[in-house]
Image 1 (cartoon, rainbow, N blue to C red):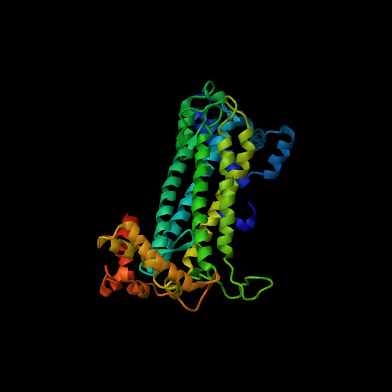
Image 2 (cartoon, rainbow, N blue to C red):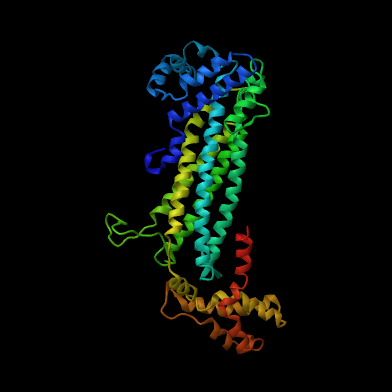
Length: 444
């Protein structure tokens, strides 16, 4: 992943030096277990740690060897032997390359998941804080992009909080599923290495033992992991698009923070564009795009092929680095989001009270009017407001007054008194269960 969309904490997990360090630890812990079993001398196992534990591996040297061997693990083991000396003959006893590669990938993905979970925690904190800040701030709810009924801005943020809470649980489960170790040798039979070695390495590396591997860890685990990242990315895009829509000039209920000296356009000095959330939409597409090849990796030939290898070398760092960056960026957006309650109220009032139409409909049915007739009564007055409020598709200065039209409608006023109609236009009615919803979302 390019530096522009990378954070050092996540990038470090995927650097060659980190990978080689994990490879060494897997091999060295395996030697400890082999020494306990009496397969290799204890002194040799100790010597392997002493000679290489503090080594800074020469990545260029390993690459040089690999250009000859055409095999990355052999190149690493050859370089490792340059430090260890004669006892290096005991390294990799009974193991196959996938034991090292797959177990290392599990460690890296688990570490990446830990960072992503921490990212989600920060985002959840930001969403909760802003949700309570705007808990009872009225705004219009939209369905199909059209004014529907009133909600609060706090409810919008609470919904996002609940969604990302679910994502956090999904990611915890995905981490658990991916954090497995396989040290089972060629074709996974343990023919040349005792299962105790796998259990020991798993314990030392913070993993659990894969119950049954072939020559690789089954790739359904990885598919589930990357699919989870894709779901998280989709949730990021959902919230990003909400901000983008709210920032449109004709809406302007909220917008990204615009810092001093920031420029929105090279041509138009007045522009304040939602560049961060647009960027998040693009990054979400990338992460989602990496889920499909992970699923295609599940169907490997027999006990093993390496068609998955090139895919994972790209999607593992790219997906985790991208999602990490996106989550941190989204948290920043929410923390600094500019919110305009006055504009929210202005938009609520734009259609002269039409947002209360359902309440009128229901009240008429309570007075004995059939639902079909009540709907017709309300709709005919509502359409008059639409006609008055919009002329030729452009908002008119003359806004319709839904309440006045209903009061002047003989069939409506025959069923509902003036006082009853006034009560049906009470905005606070829509928010009487906000506390209940917040309790559901934030109680835990």
